[in-house]
Amino acid sequence: MGQALSSSKVYRVAASHLMLVARDIATGFMLMSRVVVTLVGCVTLISAAAVYSNEAARSRFAEVVPAMFAGWLTHPAVTAEAVHSGDAGREPLAAGAEVDVVPEQRNVTRYLARRYRVADEAVRVLVSAAYRAGEAHSLDPLLILAVMAVESSMNPFAESAVGAQGLMQVMTRVHAEKFEPHGGDLAALDPVANIMVGSAILQDLIKRGGSVERGLQLYVGAGNLPDDGGYGGRVLGERARIELAATGKVEAALSSALRADAARADLRPASAAQAPEAALTVPASTPSGSQSKGGTAADQTA
Image (cartoon, rainbow, N blue to C red; front, side, top):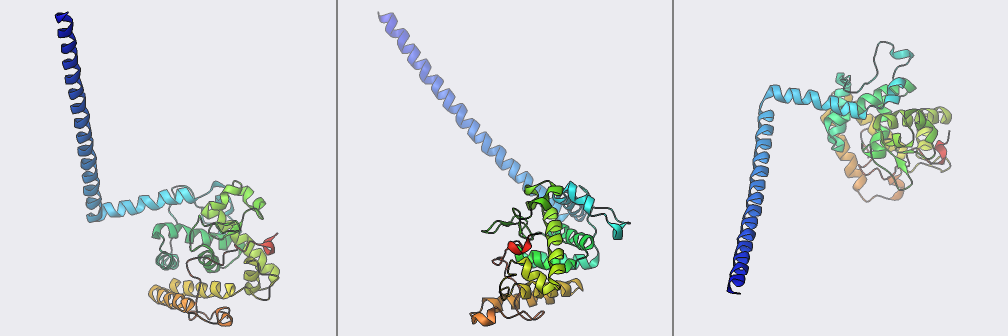
């Protein structure tokens, strides 16, 4: 009997030691994991600092990132539309391809990126796509960009309470057939496809309305109303600032935008708030895109 008790005591002691060993191993593993994570973080920070401080590395990084972004944005169905009779010598955007950048587009990109706080490389792709859409649909690319700015503040994933989607706030359910060549309804959130479809709708409405002002009124879904609530004035005001920036006067355009935003923030009578906007002097859109109907309400039915 004494021998049985002695064996039981030995087992208990062994089990206790095993538990201590297991706990020590677990503690050691956690400490080692923390060391590894800290080491990886330090290496990442050092690498980032090295890239930032090295001119050649920064240049290489700047080349790779835009190409990756352009490839993500470009929809296979859109590239086929980019080639048209007036653009015989140019190739459409392709995955990983460099985006054409002329000084005018570079200046426009700088303005829009700073105005709406969007990454410069992302805006560069959108500006290039707007210029291509303008060529494809015989439409002013600066007007396209102004509509994008007012409608979504350059946010390709914006969606309004009534279902208007994307950069140009197109009502996907109304224009579903227009997205079919681009891959279906989900293409509404593809930035390039949204620009192409939205530009086609805008061009058609301007043609039907007989003027840019009337086309914008139809685009915002106010065709049956006495006025568009100032939407057309905001778009044309922003277009004027984009045009100013395109000439290289980016700072002047940004200053004008700040004044416009400040004026819009003032508590003014309703009649003054709806007065048409004079180029470069009165408010453009605020970055909220609160008027976004996407040119997409009933007036945009094809």
